[in-house]
Image (cartoon, rainbow, N blue to C red):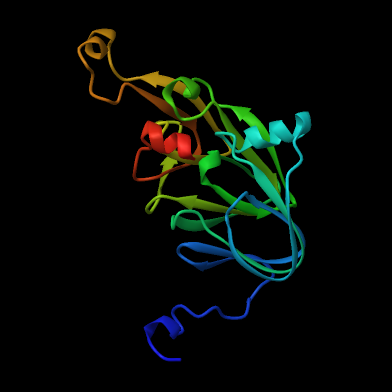
Length: 225
């Protein structure tokens, strides 16, 4: 068989490393030897002896679902083999979390992650009333976290001298050492007159980095995620 479709650009090559790797800009490959976790429904192909199990519900399971934002359910992948994960052809990235690190991320951007990572629910002050989601997940431990993002993300440094203001519909996540609060950039009079459409942002202060996607989610799209 010949043609551009069967060129090396598209052909899957043997995995160079175990665990998570970027297959291409739209897909993450995971070489499983034991257990990992992924966004439910994100698996697009697999080979080998793998089992996919929905996370248990119960009280703890419901909280684990909430941790990824917007009620995103997770699945556990167990066995030995390879699996490929993607979501709506969004761009894929891998974050390396080292001991002592902490990365807070919006659930709509979580694709898959190592089972060695711990995650917990964190309340984002004020973000719930603006549509960005009241709960985000905080990842700690040692391992890799696969993320998706609409478009190419911006990574903006935050310093004590220069806080960063981010639309809550556009924020992907931020590193440890940053605090969040709600910031209102319009007066009440301006809002009553229709406003600019940028009334409230999430203000991040401290020292670290914030990741922002180059688009804002519409209310309909946010509900789908």
